[in-house]
Image (cartoon, rainbow, N blue to C red; front, side):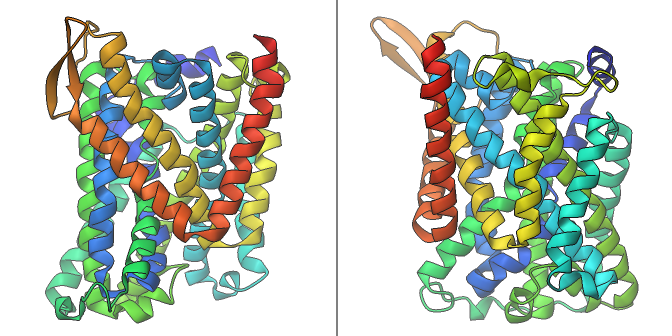
Length: 447
């Protein structure tokens, strides 16, 4: 473990950006068809609305990660700000996020592989193939094989170049304006638009992975904020521009029926569409596979960290005698990832992805506010925008309106998920109930 950490302390701007983009940037491949099926011609607007809560949260992560450059992410920030119980809640929510990451991107990778082998997009092969992809990464992570920052960087550059070329060709050759079809309230209805916006939010999740690299990054105080800004700008631009192109090229009806490989369906309609569809399918499959690995690695790291903090049983910190990896944590939670992948329900996975991530995002934004009050004199290389000075008991504090706005935006989005996604609501609250039971039976009793 120590050797691996020393290696990752060499991460520079491109390396950190690559880790962040590989997780966040893969979302457009996964959500585009789902969003179009509900938001219709207003799909680009749904992505723009969802980007608000993401951007404000990303800036909060940039401040916290650069001010507290250590691994652990949202759970560590929450503990510094609010103590163990809120830290457990953040960690447990992120566990759900990582579990779903390991399955939802396996499903997306299978969808693009299915563009090459159509049989894989049918039942039961769709879910079975996704489960096998997760299983292969579980084995690799137990023996300690992970993608390097260099490989991630190459894949990310390929993805950025690939999408840019397709958008350039698409806008200049096949794009047909459709904006007169947008009539929110009727086409789509408000209910469908809000539902689509919550699904669009799933394409922006994953910025947490940047904070996990903070303790392993050169000059984290300046590198982390730069990486977060770069990831945010490119991801938001690509989501809005590519979704606009997709609706203008194939129409929202066709796109909505192509939830498993929407980007390939768009590329298929361009000049030399067969070649571009093959290209984008390979890129999409690879990037989604890398994002799947983020989930497998992330869940084991989070379980390991929570166990070290006394929030989960200590036996989960056990390392394999030969491979020196937390194999028990990987195997236990891989069971949930495998099951969710095998079910093959992309919509349910997107619901759960939002539920856990948005809850942890709310806590992270509030942590920024609380730490400004609890630790006002800490050096902060980067600060979220929109700060005002507030006096409390004759002491002045710089309160971040950006973080407060991020909390409100994520709360609204989370309430929309809870209100409109029945299956996600049921499973999400069940997950929280199990976590709270575990906390009060295990953690609180130990104190």
